[in-house]
Image 1 (tube, rainbow, N blue to C red):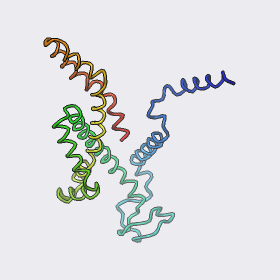
Image 2 (cartoon, one colour):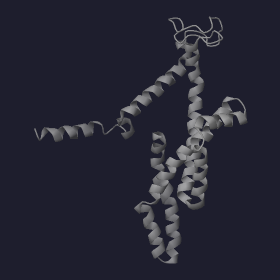
Image 3 (cartoon, one colour):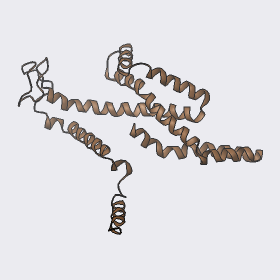
Image 4 (cartoon, rainbow, N blue to C red):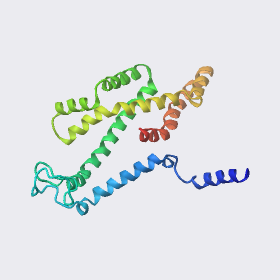
Length: 223
C-alpha cells in the first residue's frame, strides 16, 4: 500500500504536466467556457435570435413566454433577440476596455514601482483619489461631462478601472526590485571601482524589465 500511493501521485503529475498552471483551477476553466460561449453567441446571433431585434411588432411589456423567452420591452421588441445581438457590441467594448485599462495602469504602475519616490507618490496618490469615489458614480460623472456615446462610456470606465491594474503591477515591480538578483548588482556597483559602476548600472536597467515581463500578463489576467 505504501508503494502504490507515491506511484499514483507521480502518475498524476506526469498526466497534467502538459496543462498550463492557470488552467488547472476550476474557476479558470469555467470562466474560459463562459467567454467562449458568449463569443459563439455573438458570432451566430443571426441564427440563434428568433426575431428581429429592431422589429416593433409585438405587444409592449409582454411577460416571458415560449415565443418571447425574456419578454418584450416598452417598444414591443423581443428582449431575448436584443440580448443575443447585444453581445456583438458588449464583447468588443469589453476587450477594448480591459486592454486600455491594463495598458495604462500597467505602464503607470511599472513607472511607480521602478522609479519610486516622487513617481510612486504621484501615481499612487492619483490612484487613491480615483478609489476615493464610488466607481459607478465617478463613471457617471465622467460620462456626463464628456457627453453621451459608447466611446465616452469606454473612456469613463477606463478612468475608473486603471488604478487597480496600476496597484498590481506596482507591487510586482517592487517585489522584483527587492529580489537578490536585482539587489546584488547594486551592491557590486557600490563596492567595485568607478569603471565597473556604469556597466553594472546598465546591467541593472536591463535586468528589471526582462525578469518582470513574463509575470506581468499572468498577474494582470488574475485581476
